[in-house]
Length: 257
Image (cartoon, rainbow, N blue to C red; front, side, top):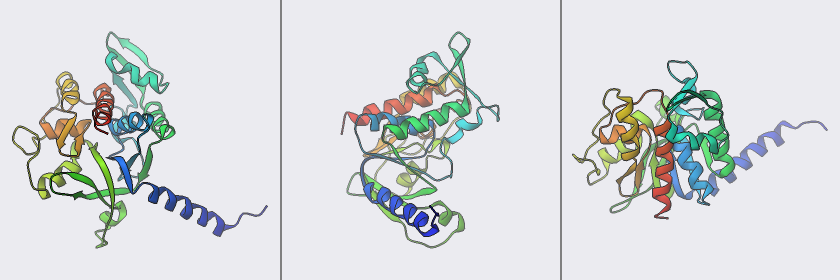
């Protein structure tokens, strides 16, 4: 049978339109497609919640693809091995409490697993604002990433969500918008973004988990965004804290849904 270009085009438009309209109102919206966001999305979707993720780049996975300085291996401590096992990711014991995994296998497996669990992902979309009511973030204001990159004046569209997770890493993109534009203070010691500190892997891994919490009504932080918001150090190419942070964010939100 001869392939028809218009049918191909119509199929893409129809399916994308359905996917987009089906996710205008969700339980949780995640901004940032790195490991912490993907893990949070996986556990939320697995629990039967409606979850959508927005990633500004073409690719999903954040910094995990490159391992450490483009050596595509990551390190995970023993406490997070259960998450690798959840996705069937192979790992190798380097020495006590240090396990390595191929970064490409790890992030591609997590991405596929999260989507099969029910997470919907939109790539090439950027969050430019939040939707706000009296005292709570209730959704996101979105535009195409190329629109922002080109500096075009094109109005965005909105999506509504019971909770939002900022998983944008060092940039803390959602938290920064809330801090700059929304009345009220963040739930940090100063009420402002504390800022990321220099590398201290052991301390960072502990604080990544501790700092994974609600930072403003309706807004949670996970992964490196949690440390950057609450003033923790960076951790480098060890990813156990990132994975456990995503799991914790999901568990905390599930208690409230």
